[in-house]
Length: 243
Image (cartoon, rainbow, N blue to C red; front, side, top):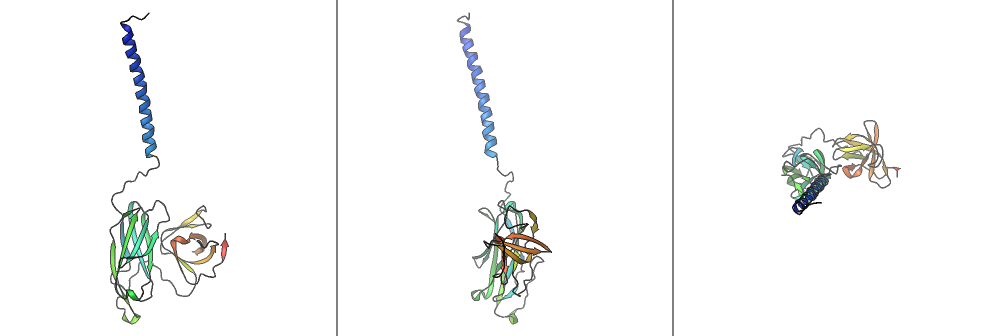
């Protein structure tokens, strides 16, 4: 039999034991919530906004009205560049996105622009890169658009990854950004390798939705998404070779 003197002590001990159990359970729950709250989050921390550089053409290069200007850019970010944009005199003329949803730590891209009559004279080209909504400081150059070839004095100096595009009517695809070269027309197909930006290859077929191109690159046949390419020549007769 427990005396009246020991009953309060026993009651206090039971309370302390119950409290300890509750605290232990609470600690476990807190640890579980903390683990769950960080699951799936990137461990990479941004170290500032993205950066971008116009690699080609050179500042002051001259072009002729109606001739396409290919602008090669190099962008980088500590987390991933999602897209790059080209502005001509403050107007967006071209946007190129990364094929990866997470973006690329280093992104090389080619953006194209065809000057019209309103662009004759000095034209400002400005490129920016994005990580989500975070935008880089712009890189800018000026080029001169002439009305005829006889007026051109300073010819452009192109980078090695900016191809010459023949005007022979052959249907070709220019790869605008590093792009997966796959065994079939869809993201579920195996990747053969990654095509570098600036790759120019004949289009030998397409899918029925006109969204994937079959290319012949260095004697290898594969597929690329048309969302990341620019087409040249007469592609109206390109056969459908996959559904």
